[in-house]
Amino acid sequence: MPNWCTNNVTLSGERVPELLKDLQAPLRLIKQEPGNWQIVESADGEEQKPYSYFFYRLKHVLPDVWVPGFDTNVEHIGSKWGATDATVIQEDEDYVHIHFASAWGPCVKGFLHICKYYELGMEYEYEESGSNISGEVEYKTEDKRVEYWKGSYAVGRVREDAPSWEQNAKRLKSAVSEFFKIELSAWDSNSIGVIDTKDALREVLEAEEECQETIKYYLIQWEELEKTTHKDVETRGCTFEEALGVF
Image (cartoon, rainbow, N blue to C red; front, top):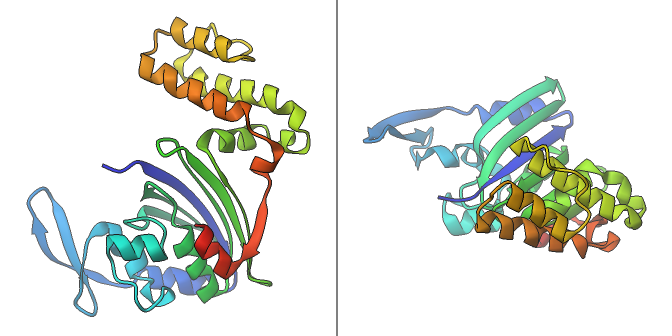
């Protein structure tokens, strides 16, 4: 089983209704295998399985060489199965949110192709703790520029929970402490105070009688956060074509 990457995308522009219409292109069930596994086909008769539905309906935005499959999905979409279990919420006529899961990594390349074809702006956030990745991507239609940040899961959460430290790297220590308090608070521990050193983190984990594997994971995250610099989290810019290589 893959590690599931969480993806949240906001698309905006006059052609959002056209995109939504294409996402509803008909697929019909042709058979059902044991285990309730459905196989459907598109209007042109090609078999598709559930994890291919999203981008198969949008294959006109992808390079002509794309067909559903591991290698071509990774090359042209960014994830081996594409967007699975997509939830689409239209906020207004030209503004839509899409939330979905993908295998191991995000589908940034696929969504960049969507944006270019439909002339849409994009804000894209993703994170996957198992693969230790996270990032943010913005696509601007007016100049076809991509602004992005990509890094570790832990650093991504620090950016989210304490973004002010980006303007003052000296605040990193307090941001790191706050990150771990938030991460560990799910255990409802009364012993979590200021976690300002690696030893303090170890003490909290041992007090909670966590297994050695969990302790090791969080200590590695601490080390990674501790050596993070402002440069590691600054936003970068590139062209559309360059972004396809970045992701």
